[in-house]
Amino acid sequence: MLHIVRPWEQIDNDVLTVFYADCAAHDGILAVPPPPFSELIDQLSVRTVCLTTEGGTICAAGYARVGETTATLFGAVHPTWRKRGLGRALIAALEDAAQRPMLHVRSEALHPDAERLFAACGYRKDFSEFWLRRDLIAPIPRFEPLLVETWTMRNASRFFETYVAAFSTRPRGTTDADASGWIAEYDSDPDFRPELSYLAMMEGRDAAFVTTFAGSPHPDTGYIGQIGTHPDFRRRGIAQRLLGLVMARFAVKHVPALDIHVGEDNPEAIRVYEGVGFVRQGRRGRYIKTP
Picture 1 (cartoon, one colour):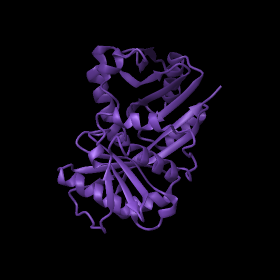
Picture 2 (cartoon, rainbow, N blue to C red):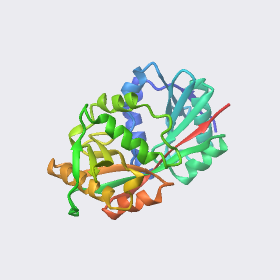
Picture 3 (cartoon, one colour):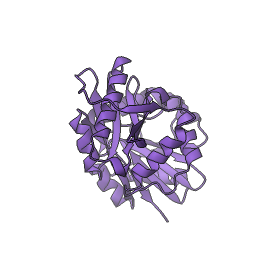
Picture 4 (tube, rainbow, N blue to C red):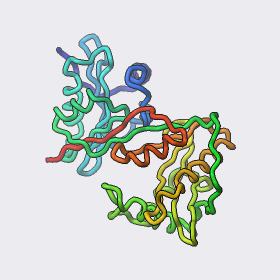
């Protein structure tokens, strides 16, 4: 079919809001919502693209965040315009707009059709995750109390050391992690909640940790950024006890729900989260294309 490729304009903002609401109604709410469209247009590191009919109807829309050598692509085809080759056309237009040798494509509502499209366009899976949510209005199980410390500048390095130990056995590992950068990323985030982030101790050692956020990526919800148990203390229920503590503390603050993202290749963690009442909401993932 014929279509016109052009950047977004400020006049498109209301139309794009409806466009993405229609996509969410069809595909499910995005695990991580996009920034306001008006903000994206004004960012120098963003390239916007939409495909329209000759009459001006927007059929597909997306944007690319560009770095020095890498670009990350986001986009969608409106449900009423799918199965017409517009997905490939949108990715090609975003690649042309990005003009970077390293390309990532992100999906915050990952479905089999999208996975087939990415593969057909030469992308391979980097990771995929489930988005899970725990309703905090529902009863929260009681667990045996833990000895914990909340995050401070004095103990942040111990959080990092526990993180490295906990994630070192995961396929993606943490060998490239840098303590100062890891800590600074948390401390510079306005949504980070140090007072609701905990380091658990057992037998005089740091045994597990959890870091949390509020209001991001979804308004009015809590979010578990990372949670992990030192290999020496696994299968002793520490993760469940930390989750119970976090859920109870967020509930006291009248936060209605708590979210977490977990890799599909981590079935043991998924069982732990679902065992305390987390429910799957959707999937997200990143695919990459290299020269």
